[in-house]
Length: 140
Image (cartoon, rainbow, N blue to C red; front, side, top):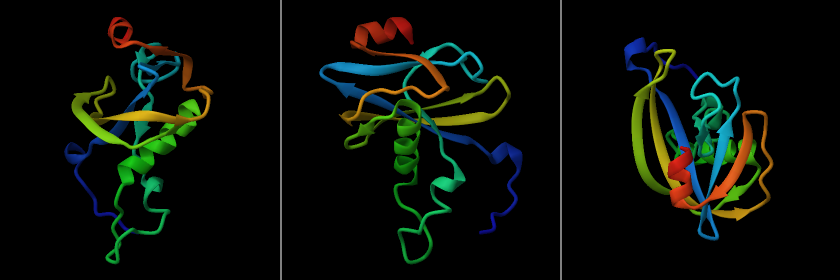
């Protein structure tokens, strides 16, 4: 598939994050120290939309478009980062910022129930915790 050239000022990194809740607590992870953005900081699981999240899958419409590409990406990122499955994905809020390496980012955050699995961290994160809202505010 061909994509037209786009001026750099029009490009944004699209990121989705999951505020995952279970038994009244929320899952947070501490980022590895090698991460470019916010190394060593506590955050929620998530990551960037990758072109493979939709281009390498069959389109969901007859005219070659993909529905739920962001949700598909979020589910993949959560599986990769923490090894769990999520329930119904509900939009919560969005945030835009410029990374330290000058890449603009649009982050969409979703509120989702834990569905199954035990947390198993990949190398992108070094620690995790299930915390109450007040505890999360103190760490994040």
